[in-house]
Every structure is written in C-alpha cells, then in structure tokens.
Amino acid sequence: MAEGIPNGTDEGAADRGEPDIKENGLNSKGRILKGAGIFVVLFLLYVVISGIVPPLFHKEADLKTSLSGETNADTQERILCVDDNREALIWRLRMIEAAEEEIVLSTFDFRADNSGQDMMAALLNAAQRGVNVRVIIDGISGTFYLQCNRIFQAFASHPNIQVRFYNPINLLTPWKLNYRLHDKYLIVDDAFYILGGRNTNDLFLGEYQEKYNVDRDVLVCSGKGSGSVSQVKDYFTQIWGLPCCKQLAFCSEKYGKELKRLEEHYEELLKQYPETSLPIDWQTETIEAESVHLLTNPIEPENKKPKLWEQLCLVMRQGKQIIIETPYIICDDAMYDALTGLCDEGRQIQIIVNAVESGANPFGCTDYLNEKDNILRTGSEVFELMAGQSLHTKTVLADDRISVIGSYNLDIRSTYLDTELMLVIDCPQLNDMLRKDAAAKMDMSRHVMPDGTESPGINFREKEMPFFRQISSEMLKIFSGLFRHLL
Image 1 (cartoon, rainbow, N blue to C red):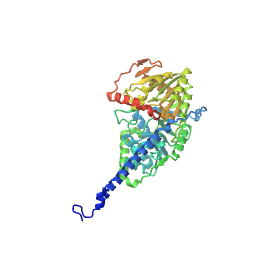
Image 2 (cartoon, rainbow, N blue to C red):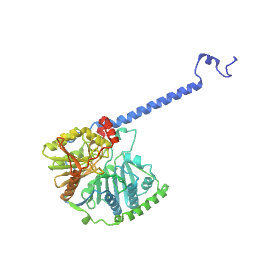
Image 3 (cartoon, rainbow, N blue to C red):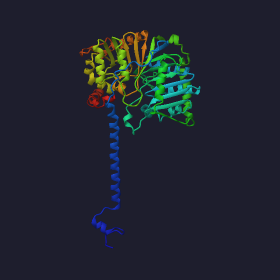
Image 4 (cartoon, helix red, strand yellow):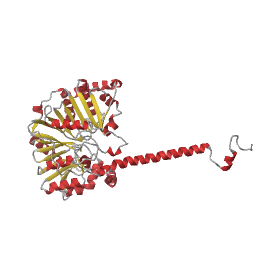
C-alpha cells in the first residue's frame, strides 16, 4: 500500500478526482431542496393566479331582473331599527333567551372575543334548554379565528348545536377562495329575526372597544312561519344544504372546563344585562311596517350575476330622492353606468361614505382617491363623513317610504363575489328616522358636488391623515388597480 493513502481508500478514484459518497449525498440533498423550492413557488403562483384571475370575469346582469320575493302586504310585520352597538348585543341576547324551539345564526366574521363569547354562552344556554341551534360562519373567519379555539370547540360540541363553515379554505381549489358568505342574521323560532351589517365580534357588538364600527340592524317580528321571516329561513335552508358548507364535529367530553366557563359567563351576562330576561313587548318596542321583503345575491361560491345590485337599482327607480350609506364606493363600469342612468333620469343621488382621513379600510379609501372623478361623473353627490368612528352601515333610502337595510356594500365584491342580503321595508316612520340620521351625518361631512365643488357641513371637523397612512395610501394607489376587482 502506498504511503500517505489512508487504508480503505480507492487509490484510483482519488487519482481520477471522482466524488466520494459524502459529496454525492450532498448533491442529491441539494437537488431535492431545489426541486421542493421550485414546487412551492409554482404552487403559490397557482394559488395566487387561481384566486385573482377567475373573479376578473364578471357576469352580466339579467335584463329581466325584477324585485324578488313577495311584499307580504297581508302580513302585519313589526320592526325596530338598531343603530347602537350595546343595544345590538342586548337584542340578540333577548332573542336567544326567548327562544323555545330553534335558533339560526349566520355571520361573516365570528371571533371568540368578549361579545363572541357572550353570544356563545347565550346560545349554549338555549341548547341546554332543549333549543336546536344551527350556526353558519364564513369559512375564512371560521378557519382563522375559531376552529382551533377551545371555547368555540366546547360550544360546538353540544349535541343540540350544529356548526358549519361556508366554503372553508381549500388550497386545492384556490379559485373558490374569494367567494365569501357575507350574510348577518339571527332567526328565532321562525317568528322573528334581526338582520343587518353587524359581524359577531367586539367591533360591532357591546361596548368593549373605544374604536368600533357604526352599523345598523333591523329587528323584524313576522309571526310564526309567515311574512318575511319565511323568506329569510328559506334562504338559510338553501345555504345550509350547499355541498360547500362543511359540518364541524367535536366531542363534548373533552371540554368540561370550557363548558363550565361558558355557563358561568352566561350567569354573569344576566347580571350585567338584566333586560335580557325581560319578555319582548312587540307592540310597544316596535313599529308597524306596510311590507318587508328580502333581496338576495346568488349563493354558490362562484362568480355571480349582480342580482342584488340590479334589484337595488329597481328600488331606487321608484323614487326621486335617493340616499345611500356605504362604507366604501368601489364600482366597475357597469355599476357606474347604472348610477349615471339613475341620475340622468332626474334623480338626486346622495352617497354618504367614510372620508379617507377616518375610514378603517385602507383599500376602500385608496380606491376612492383613485376613482373619485369617475364617481362624480355619474352625477351623484358624495358626503365624505368625518365621524369619530368608522361607518359600516349599508342603507338605501328612496323618497319618504322605502328603506333598504342589510349587508350589501356599494362595491365590486358585494356585487359579484359574496352572498348578500338586504331588506326592503315600506315604512314612512322608519324612513323618516333614517333620513334624520342621514342628515346628521351629512352635517359632519365634506359635501362634494358632481362638478367637484366642495363645502364642509356645519359640524364637519377637518382631520389630518396620519403620515404613515399617507405613505401607505400612496403605495396602495400604485398597486390596488391590479386587484380592485376583489375589493
């Protein structure tokens, strides 16, 4: 054996400079990591492209669209507008406490925060009394905020409670990610319900945060299985039975501690809100409506025909003075054309929207800056609301009788992508209250006329946009056009 060559080494291989086994292993591992990296990048591109491209192709409106649903003129329904967040929570608790047979809850954003646990505690108490409870939650909110939360798991484990997620996240079908459940309502015993724009969390229910969203619900008493409650219940039944709605299942034996915590939480709620146990006096606490009927979007997780938007346009054609309250204005060409047509026919359209200095949604505010001229070219007047809290209300008023309240934002997402609900209510007394509320908001707004002329309301207070928001807004203005069809 030659001197200097370790024993067991292939002398010929060393002379020829061939790689040893260790080097081959490193090269093989490197190729695997490189291949895995390429796969991950390609998969992410697939997810992003599949999520962004399909919603680009908006379906056109059905020219034969008519107002769906019956007006229930023979049914005397009673209503109550709920604008205060504390009252919104209390009314939900009162409704749940009054339930004897069934409760249905549908919501977009459900959190296990203070008000979310208030709701879970109340619903669990109802289930323990023998009431059947069904809850449907949008799959993105449910996956991110609830699915791994033990309090929620304990709540959903009760045998009288069924929970389903609408279109939960599935990266194997990323083209469905953008189609969300945006409905918000609570039905009790097929007799009364509350419907509007409020999610189930502290931004909308109770007085748990200094910064909150201003929103609106309408409480409706129809009577057992009659009136508009039957329309809302039928709509829920259709959603509940969709293949994209996935049932959750948890074993209650694993959650004794959490269930006890929710039971104790409800006892504390009854002390904090003693009015929860008061019977509801529909005659004194509500007002009579001439008619109430439901407007809906298609329900499948796919590109939608703008059914609800077209029906709203039909409602607005019934009046001459139109007020729209919306958190955002994000329109495509077809929506601009519809607004232009309404104004050209002699209608005054006034839109109340968050001022960019105070709005909570940076994407909505940025798009407004980009599209302001196009909005004004429709002939609409805009009131840029500068309030202490962000506006989340969705309301349309047509003359002095018709009020429309629900979950629909004046944006592309609500028009073409999400499930949405709006109630059309014929009630002069309600309309008068909402017009007075809108007038107060206008006084706190910057009034922008179609020609671009601006004037402050008597209670308008200028607010400077924070420097960081100015920078982020300028950056978003550059890129938001790439995905505004998703806003």
